[in-house]
Length: 305
Image 1 (cartoon, one colour):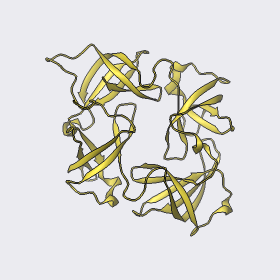
Image 2: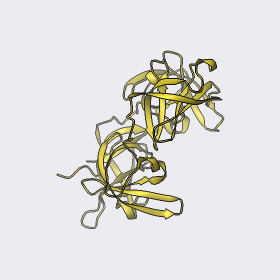
Image 3: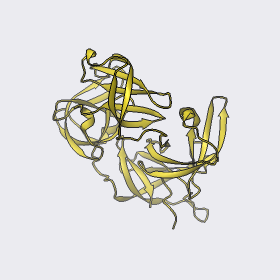
Image 4: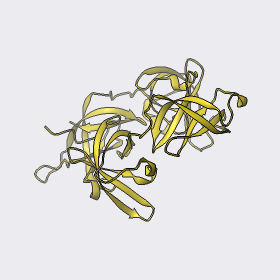
């Protein structure tokens, strides 16, 4: 029985490193292949200290699928695991502001591969920590080989669990310093969170409204990425979509993957990657049945059934 044509976020897959290809002097990738001969690319520059070799088997997580259907893998770290606790030595502490102009601290350490690992926190006084001090951190996320940390037992917005829906109140709509418009949300502990306005025009959200959101990931800038419940699509359910087009995806000549575009219920384009063509007898379908593996930026993440 064939595995699904599409990858799912959070999926754990064993790959073999088949070769390294270079697209330019500063742009090279590992070509990875799984047991079903599906190929994916992994940028070499983030994993120079992992000591990867051609022919080696590695475990990767499907870390992220963006709204254009592009897949991002994260290989298993040689020394650390997400959600585990480790000792680190503080190298430096930087004070800065987040997008809401709240004070946050970047506590930097060096991990066992020589990369900088960062804990971003808003709940410490400047004198609580100092360079050279040992501190215990939980690994919140590993992205592009970099560790993102949280202080053990500290109460923060990271106590919101992935996949669990919480209530948030829409406090305001503002254009922030990055020039994007956001919904400003508050949780029951009055902590502030952001939703990009442009992704949720079909949700009909209003100031003062209470909505349910879940954490879909922990960002590299130290905050939770929230996703509200979709007005129509539900994770795990199957729906028919109008087929738009099929073409080779990003670097598809190497991977053999296809980018599939369909229309959602609002007439918006939704893209996803398939390891197999949808063409049968030189014909492409008018409609395709897909399972919703998740919701991101107001759009369903799709897998062909």
